[in-house]
Image (cartoon, rainbow, N blue to C red):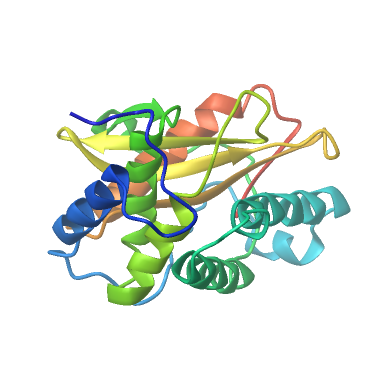
Length: 223
């Protein structure tokens, strides 16, 4: 049974949730994991729009990356492995392009997944494991260490979600908004574990995230 009150120690000491993360990470590594991140599926998008992003979009992406980094940079004693994970994350984000979503996809099978908001640390671990599965070996472990530092509350600008496939965490993604950019909402960090239906799982996760915000967002972008 998972103790939802336990948090990973920034000092690097072993904790029950860290043991759980490493145990499940080994299970993910049975797949042929690519050596770098790389999933961005777009529907109703113009690839050239990334070159003409509005300032609010660029600002929102900067705020999202700063929020992610704050979990390490603001920690009193961040572990070297979590710092390595942050560096890997920053490098991956630098290679992403943002594109505006005009129309929700109609072909994605969102019923492939059961969706859960990340509202406790065990689900943060599942989110971290799915996201980290885009990297291999030591980089994957560093990403788990980094992502399990994420702390969410009611005032967090990010909403994280995990999609379960056949009872196991298989996809994840984030919705990010900020008062400084009231007209723009960002869907980010969408991915699925490397397996035969990875593309379908990623599409399902993205489609569901779009559905959650498409009616409220003046502008919806994915990065």
